[in-house]
Length: 308
Image 1 (cartoon, rainbow, N blue to C red):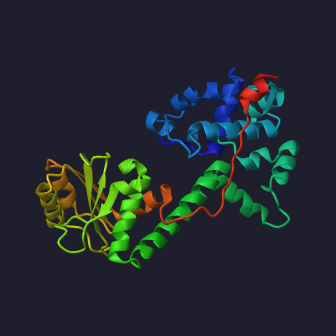
Image 2 (cartoon, rainbow, N blue to C red):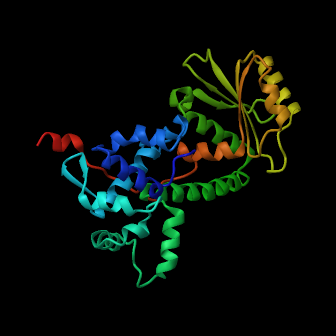
Image 3 (cartoon, rainbow, N blue to C red):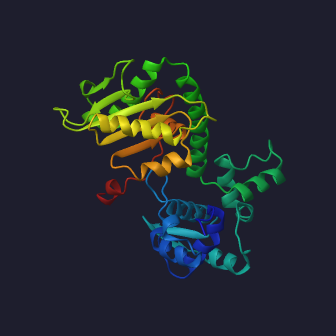
């Protein structure tokens, strides 16, 4: 099963501390085993690089600490309290935020962090949201960013159709340059003539002498108009005519199954980039977009405190 939400980890984490674990790190392997979390899912990471499993277990530990179930006698060490042991004997199978709100210390902290403004929100509605969504702060940020990027992707694809054909081809070269092709140098890339280009829209050299180059074709197709196998065959033919071994075919739409299957049978190394991937790459490499705001998430500097 995939990594459970952090509320579903609260009881298992408390149980592990009751069994003698003293850190979140020590809980990770037992959690994987007891919850049958596949290694692939356990290795899933947030943009910060921290695994989702560790992050959610960390927040489960934090919430238990705020409820008085755990104490921290020294940095990085957590021990279960008598209150935690007593609660474990009567706690439900799945401990939720609503259960922890029965403890005054947790309720005070929860209200201070903006999670329990019951004067302005219906309490029952709030509890339903907490018990079903079960997002850690990092989860919330990641989900919000995904929604923002999805909306931005749609705006980008729409904006691409407003560009001139040459402008669109130049954007693809700019993207490849930003990705490190041509050593990131502008002089290593060039557009081909608008007429008589033989099906090649641009070239980006991978070395100063142009001994190895990537040839590009860029097509702005409507979403419902997929690039077909004959389109790819013509591009591969153009690569053969140039004695080229590498090519990138970019479209704002997508590729047919036949086109994708055909690529596996040709000698040249050809990469297909559809509209969804194109938008993602433009966002990732900051081409055609700009940073509107930055959110910094800070954590404890272990090295600083270990020296004190």
